[in-house]
Every structure is written in C-alpha cells, then in structure tokens.
Length: 311
Image 1 (cartoon, rainbow, N blue to C red):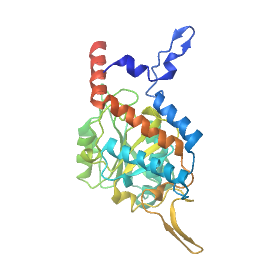
Image 2: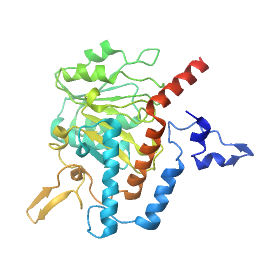
Image 3: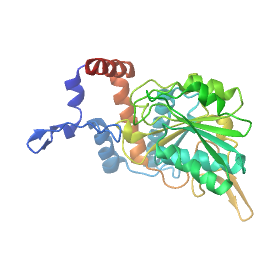
Image 4: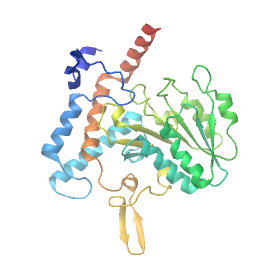
C-alpha cells in the first residue's frame, strides 16, 4: 500500500496552512474527499444533472441508473442480502431517527425498555430519549469498564421481558473500542429483540458483513467514508422495512394517491420521500470504489501497524 499515492488523490493536501503542509487528524468527525469523488460531483452537475425516478427522458434515466448503482455498491460493501434493504437518508442521525420513530410508533408503549450503552454517540441516544418522553419508555445504559469495553455479562442482565430494541455502536468515536456486535446480537436475538448498530466509525476502518453480524438495522454516513455530505445509509432487514410505517410522506414514496386512500411504494422508495441528494449519492459510489481500490484489509493492517508503533 503506497501511502503517498493515496495521499496524492486528495487535492486538499496540496494546501499550505501557515506555510506548512496540512496535517488532518479529524477524519473521525468527517473525512476529506479524494479527487474521483470531487470530479463526479462536478461532472454530474455540469453535464448529467436530472432528478431520479420521476421522468423518462435520457438524462433522468441515466441519473436513475447511476443512483441505483450506488445502492448496489453499498449492498455489496456491507454484504446486505438485497439492494432493497438499503435506504438513503441525509445522514446516519436521520437513519437512527427513522428507526426510532417508525419502530417506536408500532412497538413501544409506556414502561417498555430501550437498551443502549455508555459508549453511544448522541445520535444513538437522543432519538430514543424522544420515545422516552413521548411514549413513556425507559432507557437503560449498559456500562463499560476502565478499558472502555462493554461488560457483556452486565449487558445481558439488563435485558428483560420489557426490552423492545437494542442500540449499540460498532466502533466508539471516543475510545476506539471495537464492540463485539456479533456476540451481542446473538445474545439479544435469543430474546427475539431487534438490534440497531451505529456503524459510522466502523465503516471506514473494518470489514462490515451485516448478514454475518445478523443485525436488524445498520446505519452509516457517507461523509465519514470519503464521500459527500448529505447522504446517510440505513440498512434494514426486509421483514422490518416492509412492515414498519413510512417515516415522512411526499412524492416518490407512494405508488397511488386517492382522496380517501394512499398506497405506499415498495422498498426502498417507501422511505425516500421527496427529492433525494442525487449528485451526492452518485458521487458516493466513487468513495466506495476508492475504498475498494485500497482494500479494507490493507487499511486494517496499516492501522494495526500504527497502533503497535505508538505503543
């Protein structure tokens, strides 16, 4: 893996700040963008722009096809079973809110419990807090030890007959802890409870296989994986996405509208109301190509080498 060749693909690193080369250490917040992503954004807006899924002219057909290509790439990137299990949102925060709102509407009542951990980002706490306030639910927090790891035995003891959903991070943005999500999912599924995983920090760093993990929902943001802002991903098992209600209503998420009846579109459009961030979604495909060209295993090995060097 040639680090100079990789770095040279990021135009921002040619910039000088206070006369010195830029050193950027904030990628866990938001990553810089390689040239192929920037070029695709420019190319689409200059020469290919059209809305998707609403017209049959040539630009619209091409844009719709490219939009769908990104969905397929994400499906392959996280090893989902079907591209219809991939929903585009504006960010991972909205993805979690989508699940909290729709799942909560159907399945959460007063006194029901939501189990999360002390490692969670605010985006995997506040949406559940809304359910606590609106529905009278109870939020439980699984503790972490001095090393920043979830104590699995204590986690398991917090699961009760009132637990309705579990939300956990895959990789902590604070401690860097890689959570044993597969083990946790196995424990939780024995009680027939669904699990949502926040994969924002894991997506750029470790291999993701949602079928192997067997999670019910998995979320991530494009801007943390060298992609544009304004694009979030929600993976959900079909059995959930088909049965949960829509999140917001509008154009694109309906197949038929009458004065007294609305028929919702099938997946994934059911959850993608209104004009989508077309250019950004299409450019995100270039981010995935960039990641694949390096190889997630190579990235993981490089990070291990850096960690060993630091220790």
